[in-house]
Length: 252
Image (cartoon, rainbow, N blue to C red):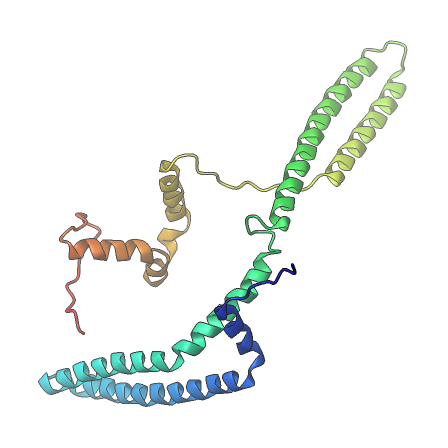
C-alpha cells in the first residue's frame, strides 16, 4: 500500500497564504485601515495633551481623558480584531520559516550542525590539550639541552653560544607550529549551583548595571520589577532605604 503524508488543515492554510496574493492584498488593506484609525485617535490624544499642558487639568478634562483612554483601549481591541486572523497566519508562516532555519542552525539542540559543533569542539579541545602538553615537553627538553650545552667542557664559548642560539630558534619554530595548528579558546561561565547566579548578577551590577541609566535598568530588570509590583499588590513590600513605592491610580 502506498504511504501518503498527511498535512494538517493549519499547514494547508499557512502554505496557501504564501501563494494567495488576495490574502496579501487584504493584509495591506487592513493595515491601511488600522493606520488611519490609529492616526486619527493619536491626533485626538495629542490635542488633549496640548490643552492640558497649556490650561492644566480639571474635572472636565479629567473626564475627557478617561473617556479617551477607554476609547483607545476599545479601538485597540477593534484593530486587533481586524488583523488577528492575518497576523495569526503570518506568524504561523514565520514559524514554518523559522523551523526550516532551526533545523540546520548550529546553535539549536538536536540539529545535526549542533551535534557536529559539539563533536568538533571536543575534538579540537583534545588537540589543544595535547599541544599544551607538547609545549611543556618542548620547554623541558629545551632547558635540559641548554644545561647539557653549558656543562659541555669540550665546546668553546663560541660553539656554546652558537648551539644555544640554534636551540632557541628551534624552540620558537616548534612553538609557532603548535600555535598554527590549534584554535583560540574562550572562557564561558558555567553555573554549578543556583547561588552562582547571584554571583553573576552581582558581578554584572558592579561592572555594568550601576553605570546604566534608570531607563535602561528598567528594561534590563523588567521581569524582576514586575514581580515586585505583583507582590506589592498582595501587600508584600521590599523594606529598604533604597526602594520606595509610588501609589498609582488604576485607570481602566
